[in-house]
Length: 152
Image (cartoon, rainbow, N blue to C red; front, side, top):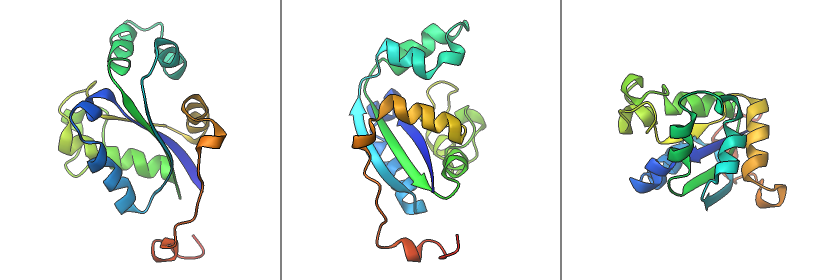
């Protein structure tokens, strides 16, 4: 099983789309093993977006991500990093395909509702920033045999 960090960003929280997006992950058969609402601090933002801190757009990014509460999720599943990214669609909501989260709910590059890890290594680093190991509740849902074959 692979894990990914998903952040429901301040625009998602303010627009009250949290349940809708979580429902999509659950309907897909992904397992949410950690979830909490929090306020991202400037220090957390700098750690999370370390590769962008020196870029000219960073101050706006930091102001956005720290501008309101977020919901952090740790999601688990087979190939979950790619599955989640495919479900979200292109970063710019104007370019995202209909049926994806951003294609259905976003028309912006920055106000794109959700962050998801872009690879297993990033997922590990990001999950450690937002969750203590004790906050994760790994479990095998009883419906798992109905979601995937035993050899998957």
